[in-house]
Amino acid sequence: MKRLKSVLVLISSCLILLSSCSENYSNGERIGVITQFSETGLIWKSWEGHLNVTQTGMNSSVPFDFSIDNDYPDEQIITKLDSAAQYGWKVKLVYHETAGKNWFSNRGETSHFITKVEVLEKNFGNAFNGNQQQKISGKVIDTIYVVITPDNPDYKKFFK
Image (cartoon, rainbow, N blue to C red; front, side, top):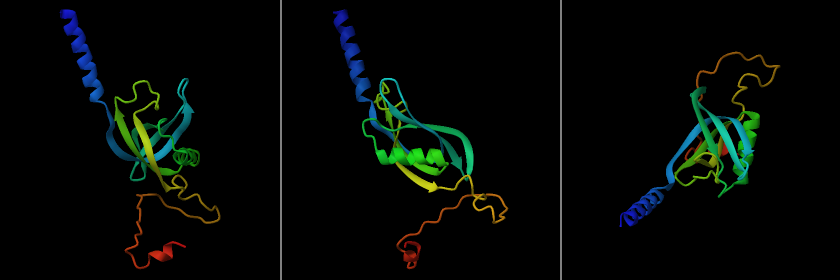
């Protein structure tokens, strides 16, 4: 009887643990520069990356490791991340985090899976080193983004 009780407690504990796992534990976005992006793995190959998070144009000491979900690989995301890592672009990564759904790391080495990539700046590290014939001096104080919406009557002049 005690053995049956122990087995039932073990089975119910496993069921509670499995039911508490979440595919969509959290959602978010991070902005920064990709410093590493590669395909890794012995049994399950996965795309893994590292983002140096930036705050107001400066690098932060907060690293962000991410994966591309092997269950839903997107070639456009992989290509954009690879280019961002190669050329030093500043990007915004939109991700979702799972809890308990990646026990064997078969989907990726982390639980943060990238769902969208937006390139914010392609010349982030070379703001003053563009054309050597122009002598530009100064320093970057902060980064400002301007959003042009169709509500503006002159918006068509920005899109050719």
